[in-house]
Amino acid sequence: MARYLEAKCRLCRREGEKLFIKGSKCHSDKCPIERRPYAPGMHGQNRRSKTSDYGLQLREKQKVKRIYGLQEKQFRSYFKDADRMPGVTGLNLLQLIEARLDNVVYRMGLATSRTEARQIVRHKLVKVNGRIANIPSFNVRVGSRLELVDDAKEHLRVNAATEAAGNLGTAEWMDVDLPTRQGTFRELPARDQLDAGIREQLIVELYSK
Image 1 (cartoon, helix red, strand yellow):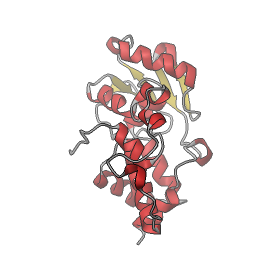
Image 2 (cartoon, rainbow, N blue to C red; image 1 turned 120 degrees about the horizontal axis):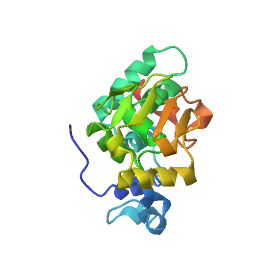
Image 3 (spheres, one colour; image 1 turned 60 degrees about the vertical axis):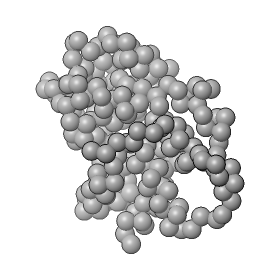
Image 4 (cartoon, one colour; image 1 turned 30 degrees about the vertical axis):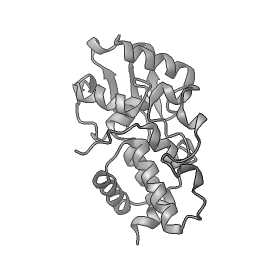
């Protein structure tokens, strides 16, 4: 699968807001967008043209893809599934992505970023309902219980993540016990529990053309 190998902070600057893809750095004064709140590149400070409706829709899609670390093929597949489901397509899309195993590990506070959570999953350090799961895109069902394997519970990165989560909090739709590194995916998140800055309707309009 293709990977983005450039500086990830450039992605935040391109979208004009923090996407929280660098973990603890995003919560510190070292975050580049604090010092350079404009798009990267030699013309980044001079962009003044009005963005078209299509441009707004495209930027919103790119932003959400970057927040969750998804490729276009994956993202489009989630949209097709969301569109077939009953209910509001935009909310369905966000809930499907939120139920990814790597995202759930991140939301539980066991990793400081989704990239780090994906690495934890791939290294077979996560159990779902007592069984090791090592596929980041694995769909976590409501009621599933997650925990780290014993050897991973005191890793330095895990300790740093849980300490940060103790200060920042964990997802409202999960029951998490940080000291034991385990929790339950209690329910799908409601829209008001998710990022208010995401305008999923623009994505629906883009893919519905």
